[in-house]
Amino acid sequence: MDLWTLEEDWKAARHALSRAQLELRRLRLFLMLKRFNPSQPRVPAGNPGGGRWTDGGGSEGASRIDFVSNRPRQGGSTRVIRGRAYETTPAQEVRLDVSAARARALVQEVQRHDPNWRPTPSIYEGVEGAILANEAAAMQAAARLRELRRPEPVRGPMEEILMPDGQHVGMRYRSTSDRTRTVTSSEFDSLLEALTPGSQVVQSPVGYRGLWYRRPDGSIFGVRRSEENGITVDVIQNNHPILRSGYKVHQQ
Image (cartoon, rainbow, N blue to C red; front, side, top):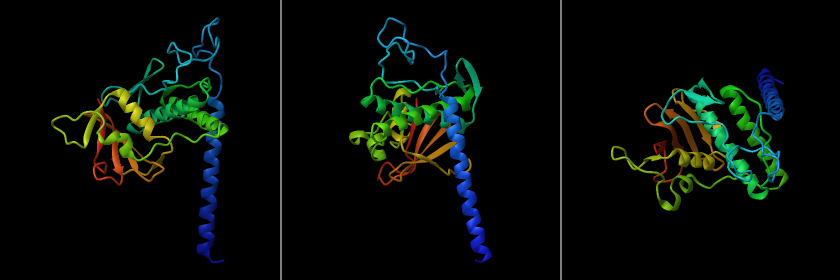
């Protein structure tokens, strides 16, 4: 066996070990975040589902759970989490928004088949803790979907999400092209919930103020913070005559 082959084998072994260590860390974090949180709101005794965890929205059977995101209207570099303001990097803001959107999408899909299911609340602090809590909820929902023998809610091509029925989402300001759209905060959340399930982080260029994600169909979108226009979705790679690189959607 020559030295080149030995070196390649060594690199492959190190890569496999690194992946195993990463999965072990994720499992430990998941188990840690599954701990019960006594301060989480509960359904009052005497009501249907009394004592059960709720999202505090007033309806124990509500299908939408607001995972931590708390996005400001404009660019900003802080997020308020449990009453405290935390400085954030552009990448942290994106991870917070994407993790919250994916958790919502997966939990809502579980609740289509098991309406009373809820993820176990997590104890967390700060931005990274909130991201991990969102990811833990998403992992629980994904596991429940596997138990139910249901697939994750992966949507079709980007044009079905950003141009439903052939119509652009949101509105266009006069000073921008038709390939730059602006949507409300709730509409932006819905777009992220549709885009993120099944997507994986890929390498983005140096200087991009966010992260790129590859969807199962091979298309790529980016989520970044724009100082002028707030959080933004960019189409990076997509096989569509209009919805191609350069198309973007801002949050109002």
